[in-house]
Image (spheres, one colour):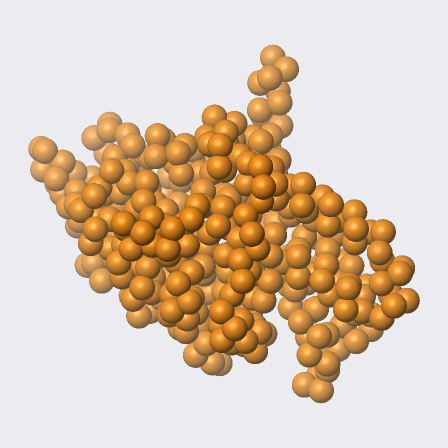
Length: 374
């Protein structure tokens, strides 16, 4: 297939991201840029990419949305991480059978008036038999029209204090399959913790969430069967996530192109090899997402995600080599490009640990191969 065209950001958004990427990454507690990310991405129409016009979107495909996330990740991985959370929640509504929930909440999510957070990393690990569900739903009536929700999730991104919805999977107490609910920030019993003290991506509004006897009715249910829903949604979940790696790797490799002729000559072969691998993996990703092959063959997408993380690591190393000693300076007088190199190194260190982590994916691939061998 032909890859989607590279997404071009509006000039004003690109300039804002470029100017504030360092502050968003490292100094969230000392500025207010974190609260601006969702509204600015929304004004640029980015949450509407890959959403049908009939639903208020700009049209296009999931692949176009991945490219839009990659475009943001070129300039700020923290902002792309927020973008991924918002757009993934939108994807859950698009794939949900709950038309009323979609009609109510899709417009404010696309407009950036409400943040969408995916608390389904735990559920994705549950789907792969890595860990049990950490949330519980107890029906409050015989017809299971109302539920009491309890539990805690230690790490969720895009929990904007201005207001959010979070998707989470809940084990049912009545023997029914686990269900996925959209939980509003202002429901009784919902507590958002302080921002996690991250070493990077500090402006991503990442915090823990606790629910204590939070009562919601079935109208908030995204899916009645977590297994079936996540099997369908996982390719988009991981595909949109891969956009972060694609954009970061592209930008790190571009830094080699802007270095001195001697540096470019020394790193040219390594950079060319990484570009070929990046292009090949991106093509595989887009083919699998578009064809739907990853629904039945999740291991194939796991391999792409692992491969992209390896490319990011290699590209970040070349970025550091191209910057040389100036990339290790931290003074306010350090050159802007050097500061960007240091930030990209921090961003690259995050790629292997975003859920599902590379360790988890490699364990899943090993189990898959053992099953094939048996």
